Length: 243
Image (tube, rainbow, N blue to C red; front, top):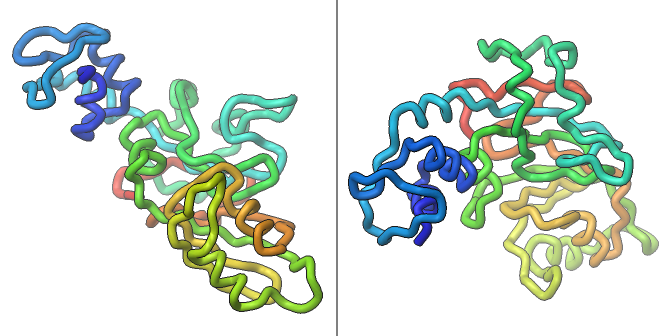
């Protein structure tokens, strides 16, 4: 197994961080310096230089209230990336983090769970591979909560059996979805709580039961709520917060 994969599987860092550490000479395998691409036994003794931990500890995670019209990652089809919203001026005045803004905090930020261009709400952008793995790794079990304004295409209200299908009766791309918590928040808005995040999942789920999505907002990821964070503004994930 590649040493970088071993480091990732042991929860020490992301694959990119592991490669950076190896390249910097901060990783020993069975007492010998590791090299990029090296393979090792699954029970190999891996030692990481404390400088790698210090570098990792300085990496920031940012919580943004994404508005409509911005893409989560790289710019696409002329639409600006969400990271372009981040500046000292757009930092929320209610941010309680003691972190001082630095332009270096905007480098190598990656979205940990996307929102499509027509969706709004809580978007996590992070430099920390541990956060990304916790939120979007294959074994992630972190809840994501959404408020979804919908309209039923047929006369009347969505039947109870179709609501039940949303909870645990649908497939996308031939794969059965995990159970979801779905309930009415008000007359025209559904609350979804998911533990997965396939591309345009909620919109596709709604389409399968005859619902048109008129608006979608992510309001919580794990224990972190969107709260009162204004649209287009951001704050740091503080040192005592955990998803």
